[in-house]
Image (cartoon, each protein chain N blue to C red):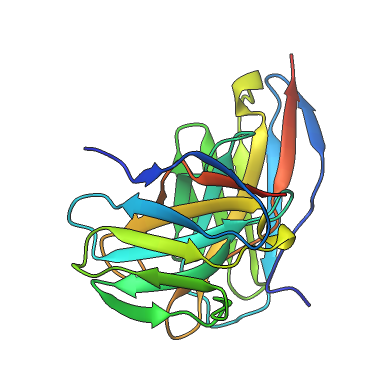
Length: 113
Length: 111
């Protein structure tokens, strides 16, 4: 069974530029999550989708971050404009449904200069 | 108080010893508990889940849960250098079953 796919794996941008990340969950998983992990910390949930609806986006900085999951499968996370403090690894995870075990993709390492 | 607290370490154990990783949490309503392993530069990998009080064993790993004490632990028997990683404790909290992570404990197994 294929795991969670993410792209790109690495991205370097200047502050105030925009960036987008893509995620394809495990086949059949209804719930998709985006996390931000800063070095030395545990992952922090940014947004959680159940199919194509948002379940929780309470920690998403909505003035600059947006995410969508239009057809209930793939998802994109966008940052516009980026700030230096957005430098982190962005992890996508999926689960069969809300509350189930979550499986992570390889992540995208973002560096904002 | 942080929702999920772990000793940041680093924790060093000799090869073949038992490594004990501990986690405390503040939300008494938490139902599901997970241990993830994260190698440097890699993403978290699920190694254990536990839902009820007591012990759960899977190979060299044993998870222990005590809801009354709000405490969950992971024991790694016969530790190997390949077990050297950061171990993240996580639990479901809130009505949306949001997964909340601790900051992780860095484990080093010395050959």
